[in-house]
Image (tube, rainbow, N blue to C red; front, side, top):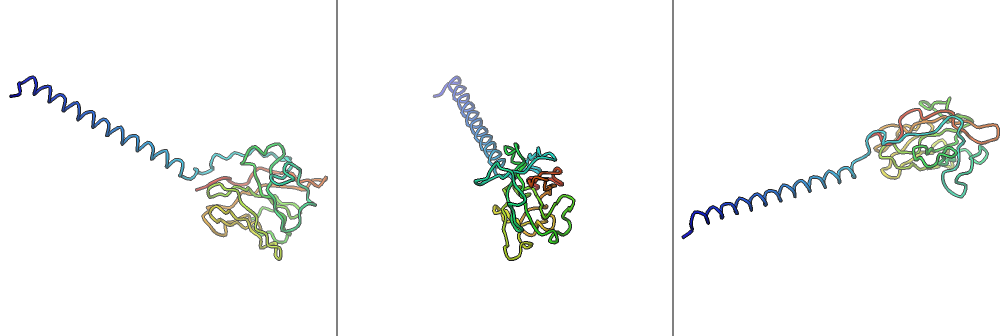
Length: 204
C-alpha cells in the first residue's frame, strides 16, 4: 500500500519530469528555428544595393583590374573597337563596388538610353556588378560585328546591351548596369568624369 507522502513524491517527480521534457522540447524548437533563420540569412539574396558604396571620384585614372597588366593605367591605344576590360580607379581596387567594365565601340553604335555625355571617343563604362545578385559580369565579344557584342553574367545568365545603356536583354537582372563617365586624357590614359548614374549592386 502506498502512503500519502509517497504518492506526493511520485506526483512531484512526474511534474518535474514533464517540465524537464517540455523545457527540452521548447529549447530544441527554439534551436531549430534559430538555425533555420541563420540558413535563410545565408541563402537569401542581398537587399537592394547590397551594401555597395563606390569611392570613385572624377579624375581617378582607370587601371587594369586583372591579368598581367593589373594595376597599370589603361590607355586608349591599347583597346580596339569591340574590346572590353575590367578596371578600377587608381589606388581604390580594394573596394569591389569600384569595379567597372570599360568598353570600346564605334560611336555610331550607341543608342538611347546611353548617356553620350558620359562617353568619349567610343569608350563607355558601366558597373561590372550584376544587378541581380552581385556577380561580376563578363564580355562576350562579337568580332564580326562589335556592335552586337554584349555583357553577360554567367551566374544566372543575365544579359546587358552596352550600346543601349546596358539595358537588360535577358535573364533575371531587374535593371541595367549603371553607367559612369569616362574621358580620354591628353596622355592617352582614361579617367572617370562622374559617379555612377544609377544604383549599383543587387537590386532584387
